Length: 217
Image: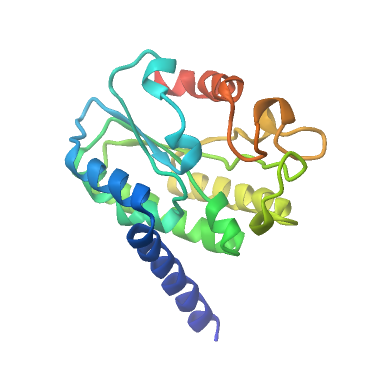
């Protein structure tokens, strides 16, 4: 029964990613653009969802080799589906953050961690010289704006981060715990860093930049 349940979750995630690519014009435009843009061995790739999509990391970090591969609404399975061109380019470094959209689709912390480990294994096998940095999920704040699909699911972020850190250790990749930098005393995304409870304002991206700067350099 457990194997059947795991198989069902995997199928659901794959179908969700496929539906997402087919139904969201922005997702399709950005994904197909990334298929055409080359990745090189000197490049540093930022891979993730809207939080990554919304930042100009190359400008913030003053590094022209940084390539943004974030797409609004993406899930971990979506990263798996579009990792091919990145692996083909054999980048120097890869920074990954994803999972909050999976949580909004009622995916468990355990399933998120398993999918992330699958992604990391794919990168390690296909591009063994790429240094991988797994970043924690950030908190959200439903008091700033209510995200109905995330209501009451703050604990899943915490649970997922615990499991993702274990994945990082197991796979020998660098773990970057951003969560404490963005959480208030109640474990919510700091209200001064967001205008919608989920995405970051400029000040938030400066905090992110400062946290990853040592790893980028």
